[in-house]
Length: 154
Image (cartoon, rainbow, N blue to C red; front, side, top):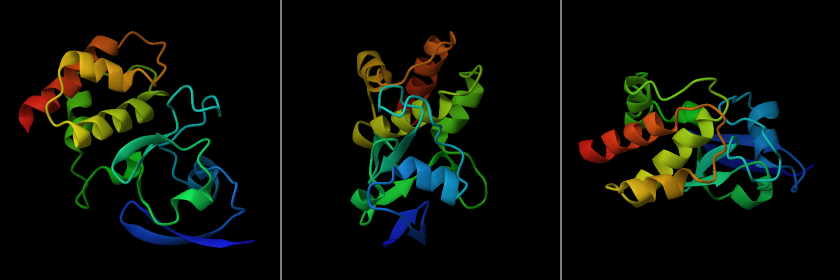
């Protein structure tokens, strides 16, 4: 079985995996990182979202062999080394922008990815960035307010 050295949350980690194994499986099963969730397995719900080189990407269909030279950040890697939450995480807490929490990983990662690309998005751009994430709760307006709070603070 091939070995890959992945850069995950600022650490270099060697994993043995078949090349076509989804990154999500490596993160959850091998590395016990439970931020990314298995939702649909088809890149349609966003629950498995991670940052790959700063961009929000679904990890359920991304083969581990395709990220060998990339910087991967999971939900667990957003807080700083002292445990201070990322500004998006903090804004979601302040706006109470979560209910069941299953979609929250993907929505937070999509929000961070958006702010990495566009530090001051308008409401339409926020909605567009979060469109890939399915959420059945009714926290959408609070999620948008949380992202707006981050845009204002930069």
